[in-house]
Image (cartoon, helix red, strand yellow):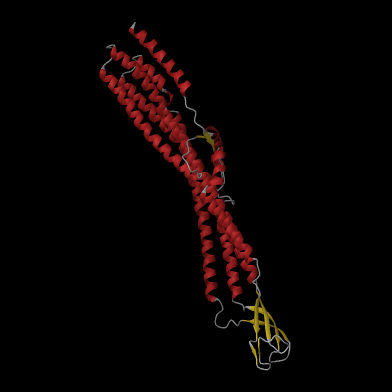
Length: 422
């Protein structure tokens, strides 16, 4: 008879607890990945700085396209000894005017423009790479917050279950049907769960603060994350067939290619600068030494006798070689990263499959709770099963997070989203 009453009491607690949870479940506003990406583009300080640097490089290119301004010399005779007049404006006074225009030769202007054009392209690729890396960091942060919420939810389920058990235990202890020690042990279980959950909540708040900084938000971000976890995992079914070689569209690789092109233009420019500096000149001299109203045209040419720009040419050659080495080194590094990230993702998928097949994954807090209140298991067995259930759930969450994080790492290695994070 006592066993029947206990079973009915357990069923009543479970039903009431379920209704209570459904009625009082808090609704958390969630942000989607696309919404967060749009906020990143609009607000992130690092991305705004990179955009300004790109604009500055384009403005420098615009300036480089301009020709040098002509120079004008103007002389006016202060005192005319022939007429005895100061600043004589008459026909007898002397005025000298000369206009000089530098003329680039040997491709000097063309190479300057080519160098700055390559630098502007490099700045654009660097901005794209900065935006892409920030996007990958945003995806990592959103995934962490998503799975940290799941971890705290595991403790929510267990804490609610323990609270129902404590309610039943207090009634049983008051009726003299339960040892005080069992009640104390169950209260200790609740306290331990609350402390562990608080640790996960602290980590969640830290990652949300990271999200606030990435999105350039002035205030704390109180929302959850809407991550299509199942859709991402489904996209990983063909991951083994992906190429292990880098694509040509990775922005940092394109930036180094532009840097190499800028170095090539700079080398040609330094060789062109070894040529003489040329400028054309026109003069007018009223009442000069030669004749009245003298007109003349000519040119000015520097003689590269002592300085033939040898040092700058060698510097440009060294910078070109350095850019070639850096480009090849980055290509090898990225290919290795792609291979490592791909293998890591495959291993994480295998671990996730194994974790999902464990026997402990089939337990639920409600099922363990019913078995305890029905006296099918002892309190020590209950605590042990609870720990195994909790550890298994946390392990599953960690494995799912590791798979998503590995997919994001692979996206970053490729330089493009071959796996859609949404």
